[in-house]
Length: 378
Picture 1 (cartoon, one colour):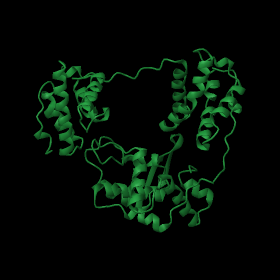
Picture 2 (tube, one colour):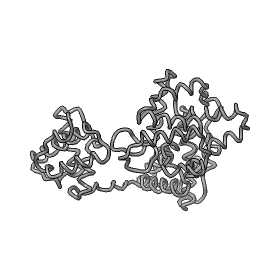
Picture 3 (cartoon, helix red, strand yellow):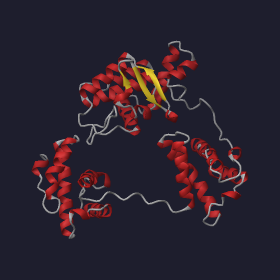
């Protein structure tokens, strides 16, 4: 595979091939990766012709039919919706293909209420999207049970404290972490009382899950381990400079993986020497920007951050299209670096405890060290 110029696209999509190749280059695809996308475009065009379809007929359903046919034909690459997304996005941007239809609204009473619950958690409680998903996922079985018992309606007016307690006891017999998540999520159903759907709050009816504080705290890295983690990054490459900057921030400032992923270019206040971090509850905190952290970020901006970045996120994916790294991407950076350094499997949160431990060793009082880890968010 030499590149997009070596791929011939015929049929319904032929008029759009040159523009698509240019767009792929603009958003950062390498010639080889762009060539694979053009090959996919050529296959889609042949499939449309074989089925008597035009470019405008490439709906979401038609794309799924094509992908099923591609898998059946034995192709081994670009077999999912994610693979065909660049092509569909380009054609939709031109108005050739209709925009994707909005997701269907849930039909059941429980799902409709869960949708309102998610909105309450996001707007009123200020919870992050991942936390909202966890809470909704934990509460769904309870509301579905209530709906079934009500013969298709929620019947919330008949909801009792005993019913809440019964659900918790039945559904949380093991997995301490899951039990704690479930009871925390159920307590957030004070939303039902706030919305006037029940006459009194049932928060007190939710029992507590057993907890043994501090037994599960990850062990902090020792100094030589932290140095080995940083040293395994090839700082002469774009990816290595990015990974080094991410790890330096995690080790020195004790941020969460999600907080690092959400950093933007505008969150680095070079003049004031501060880093603006948005944490839980969407609270913005200003942290001092240590010299080594600033140097690591600067090196990444000069060497590693792609010019074709599609947003103003600080840390970008290596592969095109270049978008912000996700929380999972930050976690993967830590996991990969720890394996290269011979430290086994290390999670990002362990670096957070490493930062707090180093502050304590430096003589910072416990309360202050916790606040320095972005105001008591350990």
